[in-house]
Amino acid sequence: MVLFAGHPGEETFEPVFNGKNSICLALEQAKKFPGTEKTVLLAPQGDFPFPGGVQIEQKNWTKKSLLEKIAELQAGYDCVYFAFADCPFLDPALADALSERHIREKADYSYADGWPYGLAPELLSPGTAGILAKILGDDDGPVERDILFSVIQKDINAFDIEAEISAVDLRCHRINLCADSKRNLLLLKNFIAAAGNIPSAADVEKIVQEKPEVLRTLPAFFPVQVYGGCPQACKICPYPMFTDSAGRKDFLDTARFSSLLDKIVSFSGDAVIDLSLWGELSLHPEKMKLIEEVVSRKSLSLVIETSGIGWKEQELENCARLCSDLTQNTGRKNTLPPLSWIVSLDSVDPQRYTELRGHGFAEAENCAKKLLSLFPKDCYTQAVRIKGSEEDTEKFYRYWKGSNVIIQKYDDFCGALEKKQASDISPVIRKPCWHIMRDMPVLIDGTVPLCREDTGSLKQQNNRILGNVFSDSLEKIWKEGDSYYREQCVKNYSGLCRDCDEYYTFNF
Image (cartoon, rainbow, N blue to C red; front, side, top):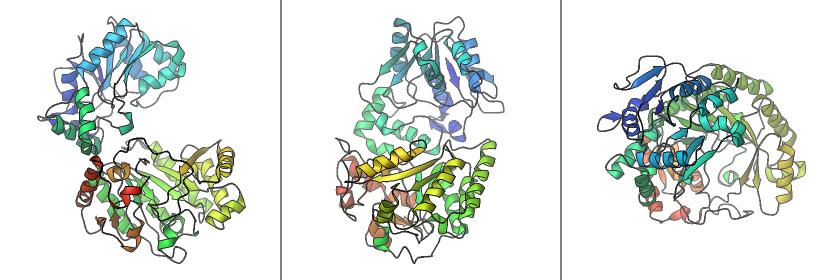
């Protein structure tokens, strides 16, 4: 059994159950795997509080050195189990089913499919890790969680692969049962509390179906309004209906924004900051300072949603330079890019663009092209799919398809806009809202509405305000949303939620 702890975070060493951290529990579970004769913990260089009683190999691991070490360790054994060491729920029964199938079918590689990450190991036959190291070639780099399968994919037809498939597909819940963040650490504790012990794969399946409230842990996505005005009055946006978006010049200053970021890091750990919830970031007089405030924090990732109007080329180049410097600096705790862009264009036809968004087509298109040259992997052009404009949407996709394209579903904001959904893509069975589960939207004055769809909050016209980030703790605000989420867990959809069709859209 090979357990990888190559880049443990502070959550890895936090107590999870009976005073034991995730590594201790993962080792205990792994030793119960059928046929296990030897367990090795692969750890980084440095002084870490790893448990005793286990062989520890320390190195600054890369993909290649890891595969070469697995090849060395598996010599003389029928197969090797591999898992990350921050997964305390590794299930011996699931490992047994996997190994039985793996050996019976003489597989090169086996994995579990349909269960949440962290319940099952991966299996390799003798010689397979060595072959993978050769296939990897010069494509070396940091070890990621999909290390084995990502290399196998380079020549997938060369391997015999087997999968143990869950009777109930739980992938749609996007659950990671590993202690790699504050959010997932809390999730582990929620499952243990619900099960009364370390849960098995069967327990996890039952808990997800019967107690979905355990899945709401900490907010991961913070769309923040930092500027009141906008250079356009888009027909597919409700914001102009509730405020004088052309005339507003109020903004969130850098000092208050920085204090909010500190609170977010303290409360959530890692998170995605989205600028701007309403209004246009490019018009903010301190926009470059705001951008630097976010990306300089190693646990945060920034997404800028923009019309593409109001940016200077030098500002965009400075952003690229800033991010380039950051990627050279190791130690980022957020696996997402430090800065991503979404440019809302909606059409490649100037006349249609003017109908939807107003003036500025040429400037917006040039901005998108500049960003794509500076951030080729992390810039997206976006169009909203509207009923009756399918041909225009197809033209948009074909024009930009060499880059990253987002075709976004139309949002009527719970009836604030005319219903123009091109098609119904909602799930057959409704599940609790992703946004109440993971998002914390923040208006320019610090007000936190239940969700972005609650446009009445722009004029304080409702009672679904959860609090204010500048006067209340984020913990208190987040707890105020619990009751709304629990309602949906028992299929009770009240107020705006009743007719909302954004509940199944996922941000981060």
